[in-house]
Image (cartoon, rainbow, N blue to C red; front, side, top):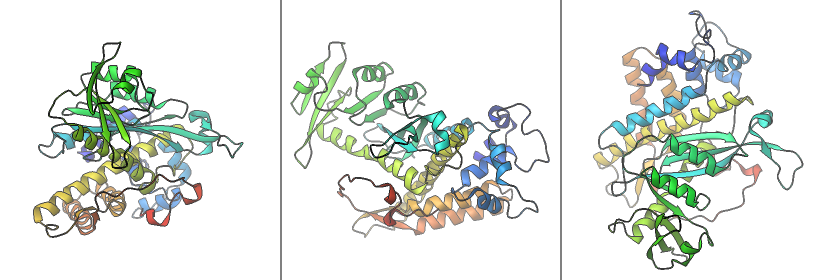
Amino acid sequence: MIRTWLESSATVQKFRTRATFFTRSTAKLTFQNLLKFVLGNNRSSAQVALNDFFIDEDYEVTKQALFEAREKISSGALVELNEKIVSKFYDEDNVAKTYKSYTLLGADGSVYQLPQGALSDFGGQRSALSVTMSAQGRAVIISDVINRLTISARLEPVQNGEGKIYSEMLDELRELPNPLLIHDRGFYSEKLASKIQKKGLSFLFRVKRNCQKNIDAANEPDHIITLASGLKLRVINFILPTGENEKLVTNIFDEEMTVADFGEIYRLRWGVETTYLMLKERLAIENFTSAKKDLILQDFHAAVVAHNLTEIGCMEQELKHAENGADINRKNARAANRNITVREIRRIFIEIMCETDLAVINKKMAKIERIIYRFFEDVRPGRTFPRETKFPSKKYPMNKKRNL
């Protein structure tokens, strides 16, 4: 599927930034080679990565030529590629996991550090300890928290609010089976809840204290209220093991969905945080290769594609593990090691995209599968970790060392 899309002349014509680009048959940096390079780049030195990419060729390519050529491709190509990967996953019968028939979609935002040269395009912020403006971008992602796939992702200027970006993303959200959108405390507003309701979608928000009088006054474990606007809400008060009251609001009134169900669904929202961990730590997404806007967006969406390919590869082998009964006598459930898989996906999978011999492709695919299948680790339930202050000097601590 990826190869067919990549090698299509329609794809080239759609995503080249000028009609005269990629018309020479003798070019070294073709549209296809550039996208393969961006997808497979592990964010090492550009020239070193180029030398590795063209290691079997009798010519060399300079990093200056690389960056000039990359500007000829729109980052929209990688957005569309991710959409195709996601669509293929959900089109396969009985593959996507759900919770009581709901596809759980977690939404969250994060601030990314960008190269200082991106300050004019993305803006920035000053820290309390610095007089220098630091270039930053605001990312928002919508993630299937059970299947761990990133459905949609955007990176915009840091001054754009999470709510505004997310609201625009909802207008472009692809159709999924019975989606339930899960939000942290920073997202709730009556306007946003009404918009989701009008689109015929289900939602679950965790709300802050002193959110709205009607919501604050609903202190029963399960309470239905109607706001002045006419919006009908179900208010859930779920008591955490710490004794803290977790107040949730939803537009799901099915009595089969209990207070405990909503508590579990909100707990599963943590999957979107795991996605950010993968993008920031394992895929080093903030290690951008250029300060130019569209190249930053290329790096961002390439990491999203790599993440989704990693998760799909891991899911396939986890299913195989279960079918083979490999973990049946173990105390804890096990899952594929994403840290190792990320590296192999970027290294071997990109080699496959460059290969034309079917026998070689099958051999390399089998190698990826063997590596993922071999490296599994325990998933220990019930672990909690206090939120700690982060120090820039410890961005990549030893226990989260990148394996790219």
